[in-house]
Structures are given as structure tokens and as C-alpha cells.
Image (cartoon, rainbow over the protein chains, first blue to last red):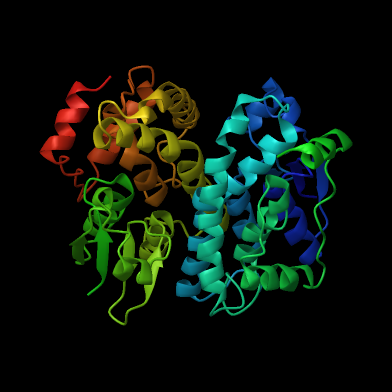
Amino acid sequence: MTTVHGYSTSGNCHKLRLLLEQLDRPCRWVEVDSSRGETRTPEYLAKNPNGKVPMLELDDGRVLVESNAILCWLAEGTSFLPSDPWQRAQALSWMFFEQYSHEPYVAVARFIRGWTPPDSPRRADLPQLRERGHEAFAVMERHLGGHAWFTGPEYGIADIALFAYTDVAGDGGFDLSPYPALRDWLARVRATSGFVAMPAPPREVQALLDQSQ
Amino acid sequence: MTTVHGYSTSGNCHKLRLLLEQLDRPCRWVEVDSSRGETRTPEYLAKNPNGKVPMLELDDGRVLVESNAILCWLAEGTSFLPSDPWQRAQALSWMFFEQYSHEPYVAVARFIRGWTPPDSPRRADLPQLRERGHEAFAVMERHLGGHAWFTGPEYGIADIALFAYTDVAGDGGFDLSPYPALRDWLARVRATSGFVAMPAPPREVQALLDQSQ
């Protein structure tokens, strides 16, 4: 059985849980708390020298890393990844957008608010992260003005990739009220068959999120 | 004929020029100087709301953005992208690694040194960018200890994606002497059929690169 090494409240990891549920494909989930250095042990680094979650491990020991590459691998041959080459390229384009122009702002703002101490100097980065995150949401809003999904005519892995951190953007201090099409799309994703929400973060993280600016 | 909108001395743009040359596929190149705001005009933003280069435009007006998604589209059905699903996924994994764990440090350090004034406050970021860039090179070095290429058994688009900014890492103040396998791989890429190097940067940029710390 395929094994996912992941941290349940990481959006990058939750992408895989969501797709695997929707594919009705069982897997073994090994919880790896990247916030406590568990991706930096010699054992973990031997499998993934880049020291990040998620990591997919096959029964024969072969390993695949990078959340969006894993989504592509799992979705190959299913309706979650279009077979039309142009549509596939567009879906990939949105997945690269997610990793370059969205996640480094939206996910990192959430991480700083919930996973660093209230006096962390990294909190000084929040205004700029928010500005860039809003630029990403504006690009998504514009696309959603004329399209129901990011993957193609149907819901699929580009939607899953972009949904993961957008759905918890509030944790990063983002207000999504200026983006009505984005909020409608989030609701459409939540209504897809087999949808599972990201688990709540640990209590001490939630306390920081609740009290943070 | 396919049109590439790109800035010739951007590594992300040069990826496309290199692959198109190696595919012997003619294209029209429209120079867009992103460092002078040419990706932020209303005309450009109408085609690519994310305001970045490169951008591929088909004769019928359809547009594809994100350098690595464009590489996948152009390489589909050629030896530059493996047909084996696991190998494809590994190639994609390296391309996501490039955009998340490599380019934001290696390319951005180069940009700050060559494209911002000597007194730019962004120069304070250079030490941290260098540290992260070296982490990426170490991951690459380790892979290259056991493999000739990043794309699969053959040279291909994951190599092109990683080559673009690694080959000009010196512009970012990176010393690659600790990475012998990486330097051998750079030489192998330069020796591939149809290889073209990135053009030299504009004179004023080169002057800044030469004088910068």
C-alpha cells in the first residue's frame, strides 16, 4: 500500500489526502511533524534530501517528492488530470503558479502567525506577504470570472493544489471578502464528492492563530 | 508560428529558447524587458494577469504561462520528456523543486546583484539567499552522485529547468567549486546538441555584477 509521509495541517500535505480520498484510494499515512524538525532527521533526509513533506513512498521503497508532482502522478489516467495536452499544460501552469506566486505568501503568512512565537522577527514580513498573497488572489479571481475550475472543464488537481492554502487563508490574516468568485469556487470545491477538510491545527497553534495580528 | 514573449537574460525565459533550439523548432521571440515594467502594461496584463515572462502565444491567440509548464507542453511527445509515468513524475518533481527551492534564491540573488542599485536595501537579503541557494545545490549534487541527468535516463526538460539559473549562479555571487558533480553536469548540458548559452546581460547590468559583493 502506498505510504504518504505528511504533516496533516500542512496544505501541501492535505492536497494528497484530499485527492486520495476523492480517488477512493487507500493509503498509509505516516505523520511527520515538520514544525518539530522531523523532516531533518538522518533517516528522513536519506529518503528526501530536501527535507520537506509530503513524500510518497511505494511498497518497493521508491520515493516521490513535491506535492504537485505527486498529485500529477496519482491523477494520471483519471478525470482529475485532463488528457488533452493543452488543458494539461494549463493545469500544470496553475500548479506552478501555486508554488511560486501563491504558496510562498499565503502559506508562509499562516506559518508565521501559527507556528512562530508572538515576538518572532519574522512577523515583520507579514505586511509584504499579505500584499503578494492578495496579488495571487486577484489573479485567481480574474480567472474564475470566466471559468468554473482551474484544471480544465472539470474539477481536478489544479483546483486541489490551489484550494489547500486558499481555504485556510484566514489563518494567515487574509480577508477573502473582496473575491466573490474565489469564495464561490471554494464552496464548489467543498461540495465535490469525497471532499475532506484539513484537520484543525494543534491546540497551541490554534491559540497563536487566534491571538495574532 | 509560435511566439515567445521573453526577456533574453532571464533564466526562466532562456529555458524556452534553449529547448526550442534543441527541438529545432522555429519561433518568433518578442523581447519584453520585465526589469523596466514591460510586463506590467495594460496590454501585457490582458494576456498574462500575473505580469511575468515568459509567455507562449499560439497563432490563434491562446496563451500559456509559467516557464516549466511551457517546457512540458513543448516537450510532449519528444525525448526531452519521458513517456514512462514514474519518470515523468520525477522530472516534474525536479521542476517543482527548481521553482520552489532553487530559483527563489539563486535567481533572486542574481537579480539583486545585477538589477538593483548598489545601495538597495534588498542587498541585505543576499546572505540568506546564498545559504538557501547552497542548500539547493547540495541536493542537486547528491542526486548527481548517482545519476547523469534530472529528467530520467536521458537529458531533458528538468535538466533545462535547473540548468538555466545554475549556469549563471556566479552572477548571484555563488561559488560552485564545492560541487564537482554539479559542475560536470553543467558541462554535459553545455555539450548537448543544439545548445545555446544565455546572452550576456545589458552593459549596465554587467557593470553592477562586476562590482557587487
